[in-house]
Length: 145
Ligand code: HEC
Image (spheres, rainbow, N blue to C red):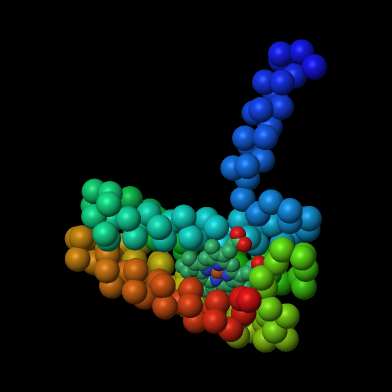
């Protein structure tokens, strides 16, 4: 193996390590996990501001809420097909109660849409985290292992 090959191998290994959801075989399952991860990343951005770990920026907080709304809107389509994977934490009841599942995604979308225009002050972040977090929990507690 020449040096260039080794370097390429190192880059590949690093990229693989940074790649979330390793071991997921089914691309449809990976896509819905990626959607959830994006929701979580944006929630984290708001949470960091809420804790004062990052500086308050209303535009950034609103943009994170808007991103959550967009991802939440995509949830029913991403989960519609009953796809499985050994790495999946999705409960089978999603597909026997799909209307309820979709309604829970819609609640998250509605909350996030509201926040995408209403966050104006640091004091808004705590309640925002509370309502968003409650929505994640209301779905995970029923439909996620
Ligand atoms: C409508 C239901 C629903 C809502 C609302 C929801 N989730 Fe999920 N979430 C799921 C399901 C189902 C899974 C498991 C998917 C799988 O493993 O196939 C999941 C998985 C995840 C995962 C793991 C993804 C991975 O890499 O395996 C994260 C992180 C996550 N959700 C974050 C959130 C956050 C943060 C919120 C709220 C802002 C939220 N979710 C709201 C249903 C929901």
